[in-house]
Image (cartoon, rainbow, N blue to C red; front, side):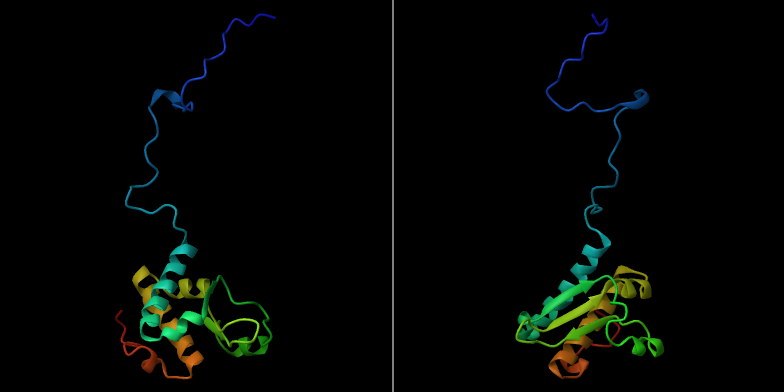
Length: 152
């Protein structure tokens, strides 16, 4: 069977759509906006920045694992404590022979309590300082002298 329309020749590059003759679509976002950075990745960067600031003063923190989880585990052993208290923002797990000490920061409870990136960065740093202080057995003010100042 003969086809009245010959097949389109394969060009050197991919074929792009130009709907309704209006031209190609422009960029989705301006070049200065990082499209590939998710909220979780941006939050992880805030935690990492805070840890790096503290590691300069406390080199032993290099052996501690810092984790970011979305939410605290439901019924994680002590669910009765949650009935009277608020949702935890972070936690500390002491070192054992199987794994090093771990500090966990919960992303969603922190994001809900903050409005801007600067406020979130300050709040994350305070949570990290509190957890490191608990791990080291010190007061938060001795871990970071600027703790509680309200400025970064």
